[in-house]
Length: 83
Image 1 (cartoon, helix red, strand yellow):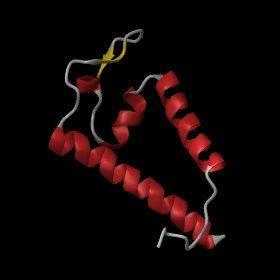
Image 2: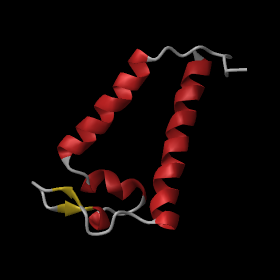
Image 3: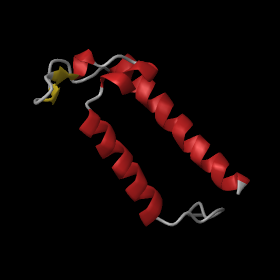
């Protein structure tokens, strides 16, 4: 049980680092619209935790649905790292 929890926490931490570093160092898509219906641009989304409150509701749902799909469809074999 603890191994599974540790793996999920590690995944969340890795996504958080990528989500913060990519916009900070590489940049975003600028004035491209993230959501046409809600008139939200990529440049309107702040870095860090505050970004969750600026994302459109359906976008957050889509992200969570995709994560759930990945977690349920691909088996997690502990110790099998492809070597």
